[in-house]
Image (cartoon, rainbow, N blue to C red):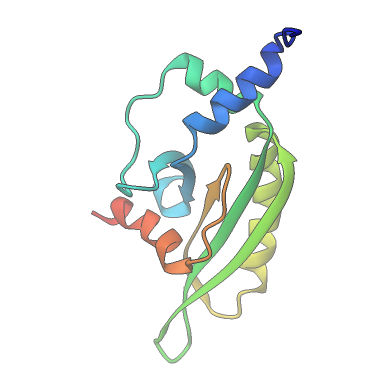
Length: 143
């Protein structure tokens, strides 16, 4: 029986995918465009991020699943939520930020109502079809 050759890059990618399985990145303009790491299970921000985890998150390219959200008020006073799902090619975290900035600005510009707030949720792996579950990731920031 031959032994498989050790591949450090493949191992790093596999371990990073396991580590970020239940995590999502969120951003809200009302919170000064700060990007937060949020647990998908508890819908609360992850407060402890080790340098090794941050490096792994930044060095690995993920196929991000993103929900872009714009909260707006129509002229008749009704609240309106405009959403758009985006599934991307593999991006690293810093490249994703540029992609999201351009895509999100286009969505905000196309919104016909008065924009109150805007944000996005990015999942590094997996896809959640339930839009309400993704929108609930923003609830912790309203407390």
